[in-house]
Image (cartoon, rainbow, N blue to C red; front, side, top):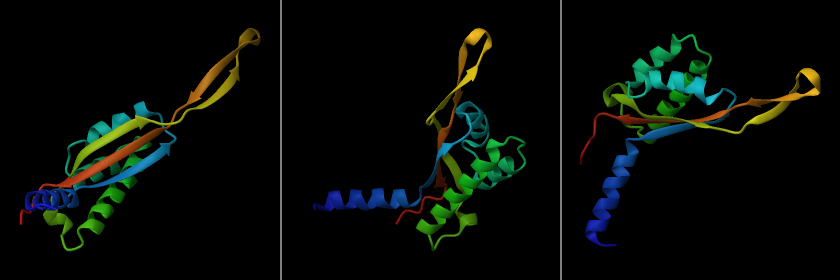
Length: 135
C-alpha cells in the first residue's frame, strides 16, 4: 500500500471512530408518528435530546430515547479512553424509514371489506463528537 493511500485510510478510520450509530428495525409505530418525534431531536446535543425525549408525551419518544442511549453506549464502546462529557456528542443524523406492513381486512357495510394497514418503521440514529481530535 502506498504512503498516501495508507494516510488516507488512517484518516478515514480516525473519522469513523468519532461516529457511532444504532438501529431499530420493525418498530410497530407508523413512520409519520415517529418522524414527528425524530424532528424534535435532529441536530441537538445528546444530553438535550435525551431530556426532550424523556419529557415528551408521545409514545414514540420512549423507543427513541432507548435507541439514543444505545447509540451513546456504542460510541463509548468505540472510544473507551474518551469521556462522554468532554466529547460533546450530538445527533448527527436520524432517519425514519417505512418498514413492513401487516395487512388486515375489516368487515364493512353491505358485504364489503376495508383494508387495514398496520405500519412499522426502521429508525437509524447516528451520533458524532464535536471535538475532532487530530493526531
